[in-house]
Image (cartoon, rainbow, N blue to C red; front, side, top):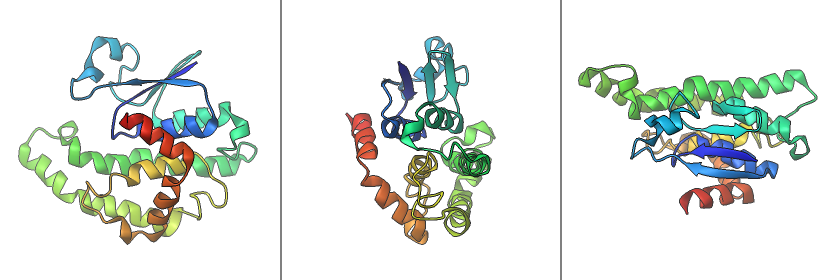
Length: 206
């Protein structure tokens, strides 16, 4: 059975939603960041990076959201969460998820994890000040050039959709109005209506 390690208000929600969409048999293990559980030896033995998500499988542990999402899509092909028969379309999907991981998430992290890049409080404050601009620019690009509509890749729902939905939930905290991005706002609304999304969110709030 699969086991997903997660924490509230993190990108682990994307993997959680994907597991629900796939109809996977899985369990959840919450990592309490407030208690610094992600740095304890017991969790570092599972994920030495000290972050979430981490997905324990019968072949070992996977980390990094794009990798976990691709694994779920390929492990449950009947769920149709990725264009598995089209290498170019699959690569386009991976390119989108990689952008969310390497650029959008990092821009957001400058608000809440500035200590990763600087020790000077003034430098951290300056990073935080710029977050609304950098995150806003990322989502402007997504809205204008990346979301085909009605889903990220077009007519087919894929593993890109829970990932975009998850990061879009952080916009308000980053000082960015989602209304600036009509495609992203509509996408978030429709995602919220999906039973798997509602279930995953309810499980994490329980």
